[in-house]
Length: 413
Image (cartoon, rainbow, N blue to C red):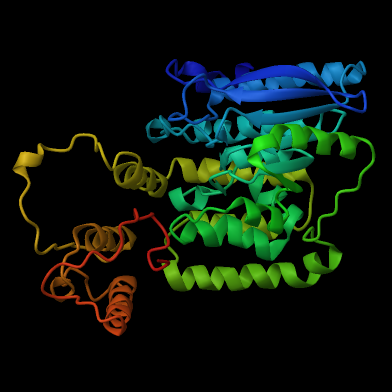
């Protein structure tokens, strides 16, 4: 589409292709199965860039026409071994300077994934492996979902990197699993060092309707889909009703907002944007909700906070073993003390990063300014915990944690 032309200028995208095959079910019905595969080995997960999304949308348009002609009775999506999709392709996101381009990314995701609910026949997603961010939102836009018992990670981690679930997740998930559970997945888990969901949790929360063992995951998922097409009812115990939406929804969001403010202050944009979207999800149309997500992504993706988050994420996680532009290791010198000038969110992040990664002795933690409300409390709490366990925080450095540091959730460790 001409509208999305500005997104197609990147010729380096590793395209995740949509391969379609017809599956003849035991009932005699035909299910069109889309397999997402970028053609790479298991070291390169499927990602969802602009070319990928437009190809996916085109395949769904073709299948909608086939459904109209009674050639197929259902559509399902799954991924290559080990992966459904690892979410949006963020490889060039730091280069985005135009708010309009950021908005187009959100609109393209809604345009493509939203077609799963417009096929005229039931849609299924078989979560065969890792499903993060936009990968999980593929599943949320479908009508039914199954999950593999060996799927390594399922999550909506967008708040962790300064965004919000912007391809339907902020609306579809709360209306699928209720306000309490959706706050956990969209807000609480990302702020707990980007915690992932296990398959059993995905099933218990109601994100997936059924779970099957890895050995026969595809076969069992197809058989289950055939039963659904035959009239089997799918029960969703956490799906919110009118009472929850009118009496519990807004108070739960208010409590979550107070907790975020206590932990992070008022500076971070994405947690509060996510809370606003979740609160609004209790009413209104899906179209209006998707527009709100577009507005939020447009605001966040061009922000300094998001660019800083992506930089920190790439530095600490994505490029931790091979950091870009790092000096020769031969130039390294022992680090015994670290000073951080500043009292804001970034200063707190760097301070805690040094504390964790360098194992700087606790007695030398004088880099935290008096104005910083989070750092001292965090260190004192860690000191008390270590004291109860008989661990030293002075003298020989004691590494407290080997996990990477996220941009938010500085105290959620």
